Amino acid sequence: MMKELHILQVGNVLVSPDIFTVKFCCDLDVCHGICCVEGDAGAPVTLDEIGEIEETLDAVWEDLSASAQAVIDRQGVAYADPDGDLVTSIVGGKDCVFTCYEKDCCLCALERAARAGKTSFVKPVSCALYPIREKTFPDGSVGLNYHRWRICKCAEEKGRQLNLPLYQFLKEPLSRRFGKEWYEELCAIAEELKAQGLLS
Image 1 (tube, helix red, strand yellow):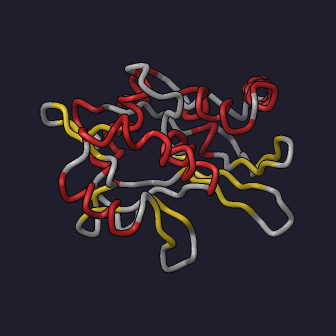
Image 2: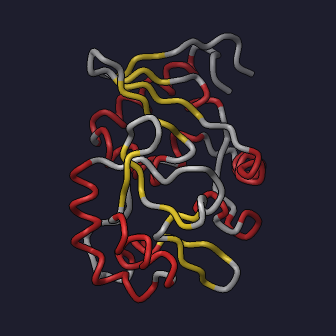
């Protein structure tokens, strides 16, 4: 069991202990992708991502609901939330405009198009990194925290069953966001923590 673990720094990224200690694996059979629907704002996006999303619109347009299409026609693929952060547009105060449905499961139209080879852009990094939330500080450093949400309890349970730490579950998006070398350093730190008895 973990004895005591504090915030760690990997490069210029401050990493919460939860990233190492929480076990996590999305369980779509249980949650049905509800994280794309619940919430009061869209997914955080960068200006570059907005440009890439706009370029993929033709490929995903038919997969979007009429309501989502109307929102995009009216305000675009993103907007500034009350905090001034850029986020994807939403429908009815909750659903991301890129939510689509397959059977009874919510999926991302952007990701589905990418997996089908129609586009090269997968989805915003903030979506891929979830349940890790990223915060940028004035000095340029970045903080990574685990966002606890009741709808992800099934993912925590599945992660414990698989003994899959959060940082391993999110290997691809973490590598995409911070680079392969950074992720390898993160894993090396985790192994060192295990050797010191600070991680189980």
